[in-house]
Image (cartoon, rainbow, N blue to C red; front, side, top):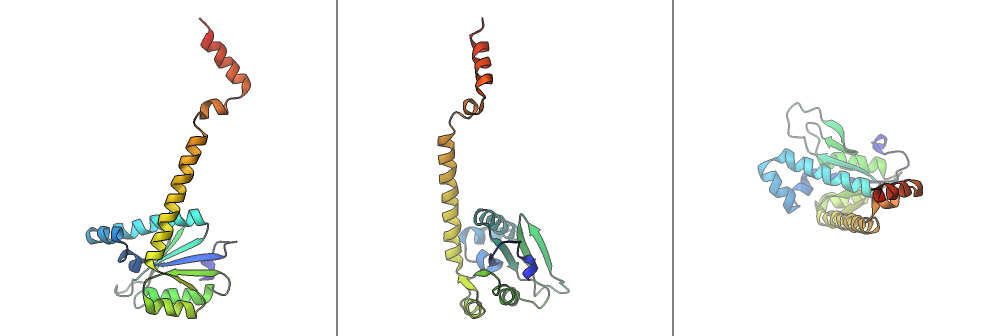
Length: 178
């Protein structure tokens, strides 16, 4: 489980995928029509958060009821996406991961499952509810939008600001030519 930690990163967020999907109204609505689209949207959101915070993010989905399921692990946009194997719940996978990683890194677990939160705390992890995670995501969205607006304001005349003085003189000369 430690092998999933990127070199130099001392913080990891593990997300209980279906717990979050069933808590966030937007994802819940998507899930009613298409569970795969809801999973993809959650991973997309978490990829943005991972890039913004510079931390490892692992999203875990239950696969324990799928017969003959060997489980899988894929990297989607820098997010490690885990589908647990047959008879392995997301909770048990998360608990094993926290137990292994908490000795070397700060491990956050996003779930609103109260019992799971207590186990995470006992294993040395930090719990964050689905609602708290949504608040963090909304905060980073606002921060990115604010920075984008500030950058646009500062770069109103980007072409002129990026020209060398020599090129600017030549363009001025051409403009004035009959």
